[in-house]
Length: 275
Image 1 (cartoon, rainbow, N blue to C red):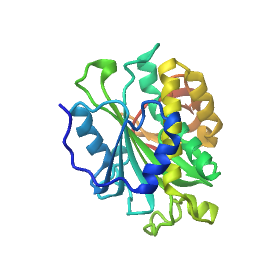
Image 2: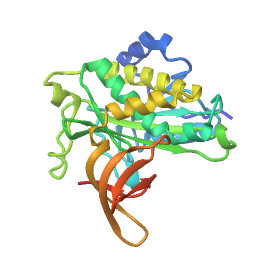
Image 3: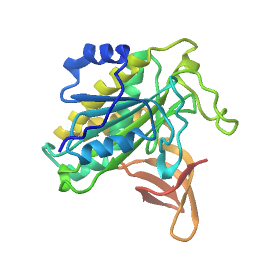
Image 4: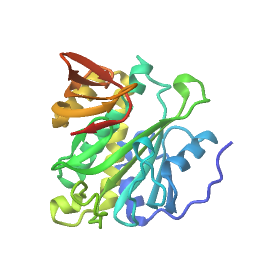
């Protein structure tokens, strides 16, 4: 059954920008739900997916009141200053290793968002494992991919949510030195609608890479935008203690490799801090 979610009218600039790139979107943005304010776009997209609206649905909010980051962190999501977007994807049509494609979806989304930002604004964005966008060592945005169980293995929808700081923001004191926005980096105004359109185009392209098994293209692109992927000091929570090491790249499934005590540890998830 399709959801009967009531949405606000899609702003004209967003609609025009998406229409302009429609030939490059494939099946993405087959339906766009816009909400002036919502708790979390990922929650809305998850409800739509559970109701039967699967691949290609896009949820956009002008503001979030409970946007989530990794490990249940709360994202700053003020109105009119950022992009708060969730996209429902599946890997059911993957022509090769679906498990590997699923493992790489967050890295693929990171590559896509960095490429979309650069295409729309000229700003080069860097990536930090596993799900952050940076510019000049300050955080520009983040990604939260959530797999919804129940549809049956590879057919399970995956909600890829992302937030990008576009306009100038009054960051809290504890974030002011660690966060930035596209406009702050460029020193000029930026068209949010174009950033939305180009990030969706790039997501569609990298989703196609996952479906076709072009995993090396995703991994190579991620490594090229991740200066902290090698040689950076990190700490992480192990079973009974906190461990320390130096990043040593990523493996072919997107896990972070860390050199510690003369050996290589493989980190898939958990609380990790870049030092």
